[in-house]
Image (cartoon, rainbow, N blue to C red; front, side, top):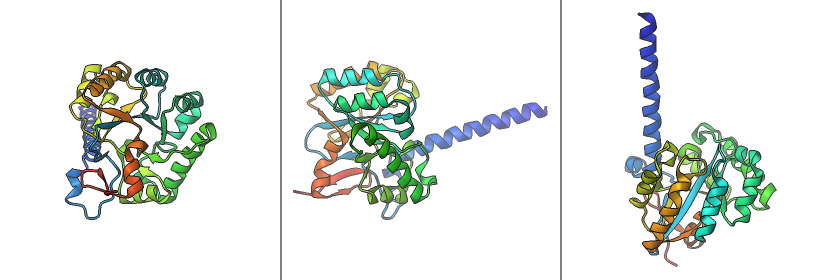
Length: 257
């Protein structure tokens, strides 16, 4: 009986952890859910107010490298570029892929050096995480990233102000393909096409099971709807040039020129 009791309790604990993790991911994907309760909350950019039908595709590269070359080929065939947020440890493991991404004209972003929960780091450690990753990318490409995505989407006011204090912009997403769940290509496609709006930033991963299968159709469908594609930095450029505010839902609103 005791063994059965312990096993059941362990299952409940595991289920509780999953619920907490899912709730955390939902919150960081929906800043408006807590915006009203927070005062002077610092937010990363989730998407950009745009009168043009522009969209930025982004890919997080933290562990595997199964599909990077194929993704580059798909983007090249479509004549578009995307932003790849790279973890420093990944850069060390796959320097040839970093070079391929750079040579193909993809934007390289910073996704930290070791993929920690940033809210659990000191400010000094945060800066070290960003700087080490930038240095590893620059050692290969000669250029340092200008944009950063928090691992796990985890941030608070201190994280965002620290990122901006070293001249980088924190970027989330307003469209999650959910490819990290291992869902089918058709589900990935539906998740993206049903949520994209002008100025969207879309989240993919470079080693998800069915992203290469879904991506060509997503690109073609958005092009048929009149969308053009740009990198994250290109999407942010107007706000960074003229100044901006960030709304409660994470929308970057560029100031009038």
